[in-house]
Length: 459
Image 1 (spheres, rainbow, N blue to C red):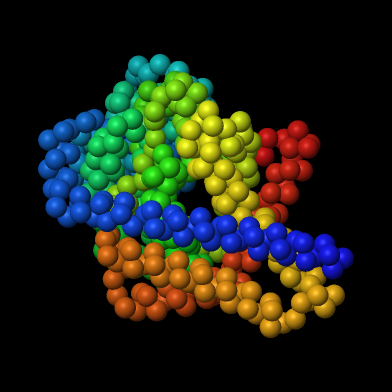
Image 2 (image 1 turned 45 degrees about the vertical axis):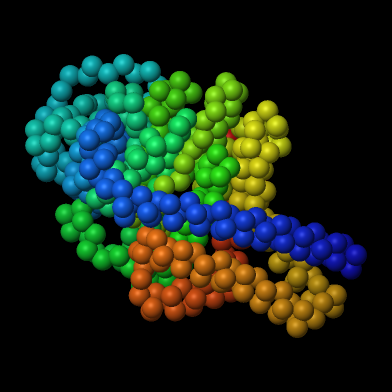
């Protein structure tokens, strides 16, 4: 038993050393990229430049029971500094007043369908056009069978005629220059097929008619911890991967795609909870099979704010679905793993995504079990365990503070000294309790996924 526990401890220690090295490398890689985007925003007059360019863009918004949020989302888009946009809201069989609110607010009138259904979706009931805004359309359809936004995005994709499409969640507020910035990041890099922007946590912030009145870290505990997690994930995690042809996962809440590529490769996977991750991996996979030198981009100065779960139960349900969806996505494209035919993505980005993002919580759970066994059988002492936890807390705190200051130097979203103190306090609370909750959730979800696969279920 002692030999097994010590071996597990040694292997997990090596794993976390490699993980820390990878995170540090991403942080160092992110610095020049984020500073470059900051300089573009400050000195480049991107709003004027992009409106002169005037590339048409369609935004597709799934809406299922979003009566309290849909109007703020839409007005944030309608007030964007980028004007050449078309908005398609897909009402996913809502059982509340979502459709009636849209009908009354935007004076919707039914129009005959002239859309070729190239991608399969749930049954379309009606198409509506706004009489107030000629660039606003609503598709009313039956609720998607998997209960995610993929079926809605496919319905919107069928109706998209512009060369670029953007996915937006109905609980998301896009900053006025967000579309201009992300579109510039997309168009200014050759062979770019997709680009994602920065997401911040909207919970606890005040929104009036689609405009953010406050920009702060949420006061409630669960959303506040996720705010720190999002700050780390986007500020350095995805920015650092720009050097490796782009990340393997961008949120459906604020990402743009080349429309033709989406249609050619079959649209979004309606059977996958993490369809936004799967489509990004698929784009990498398919384009490299075709020997096309494509990449995806993270645009740090394109900002949007989205709602996150505010209870442990809701958080568990979300992460459970995400973990199983990411596992399914990885399984579907496993042929890329360490495959030189897929270039830097196959040799670096995809293995790091699988090993350091999908399976990191699983390895961490095993490490906790090994520590507990070591204590029970006196293979280790409390001082050793204490130093182990202190080292982990110190590293994650260092990364978070570095991320905070990187954000402060460039985007400057959270700029009060009190915010820094709160960040340190939240990291401490995250490290001793909340992190273990997330780790157990992802470990349980991984087991659930494996059992379901053995039983012949997809997820």
